Length: 541
Image (cartoon, rainbow, N blue to C red; front, side, top):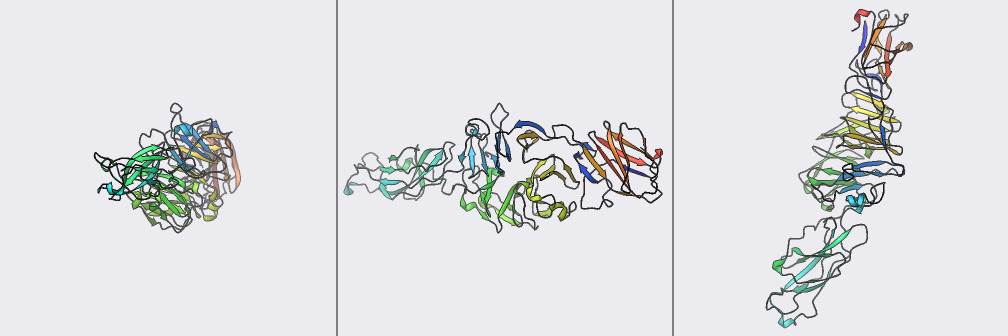
């Protein structure tokens, strides 16, 4: 008779130790199992101090500047900040946008890296505000008397928009009063121009540099007249009808709601966010413009959102939804059939074709038209709740779902079970360009898997043998290097606790032939390929 393990897998806590599949573990801690071997996970390596940030909680690697090394952006005091890069190709300003730190914000490289760390050094409120009022139109003092005015006079109205240093244009002001004007062409009577008193720029962090003037004539469409500096208060409009430019594009380009959070990038240059029970979408490739007409309301408050290849998953305090469509104005929601609210916004992770988040009964995977609890065969509800899922923050790394909770880290690979790691973190960021997961540990930034090998523990299922048939007398452990520690139990009593120093056969102590229940545990920092015990040397391989 022989007990052998050579294709190691993780824990399935829901099952009794006797009923576990052959190579699943009662305990799998600090071990990397994707190779099928027992390979120790490596501890995170401290790479940078965050001593100047109070209670750091969110991390983002700003990819521009610093000779290609970029800069760390950090936020503290428990804030959950979501950061996205500009959706514009070759953005000259290297802009990023974020929510979770007061009203939604943005900045270019000169703003973000101003001053000394911690960064961002400065920022602007996302979106362009309305002018404080509409413009006021009046006739010039030299206007010809009523009887001398041309029959080609037109009734006109004006609006003003504001434009930032980044070229972002806001929604138009209220329209001016209606006034008559005519083109000052050859032979026209004097005074066809219109004098405009321009509205002032509202206070706030907006970096407004330009006022843009539009005029509507008989067609009722506002068309471009001129750009003037933000400080300009008066303008004389002598632009002819033929010289008018493009139509006003920004009629519905509202500022995002000040409560916006959960900022997420979607394909096609669209940004998404939410507040309360309302999902918000930006204009495509215009991250400052968030039309109210694009908002969608749900029956429950939104907790988190995540983009997948099939659309946007909206996780709420009730059931999740899939929101999909070809453009922001054509998005529609579909409720997914799983009664699992999202317990932690920071637990929601984009896994590619689906997202995973922490629900009441376990981890919920949602993608396409399907959603289900993917850990239903791993944890009971009580076992899952003991991990305090509402405290979880999670990341996708190496095809696995890494969730940090109060007390450690859980690694879930669909179909493989779970492992637990003695690693704590208050936040993290996966840098896809570097292929590295960075963690916030205390007041430092650490790189996942770049430190020393951790001491792992892997304990087998409970093997049941008929009394009298389990006269195990010898064993063998195959490892890349030695020593490794092997512990053997029989009927709950420790049979052996030894340092195995070579691949050679070793002997077990006698006296346990009548024992029924056998368990093997191995610990160490060296990779192990297999372990086995047998009743005779001829059975060992």
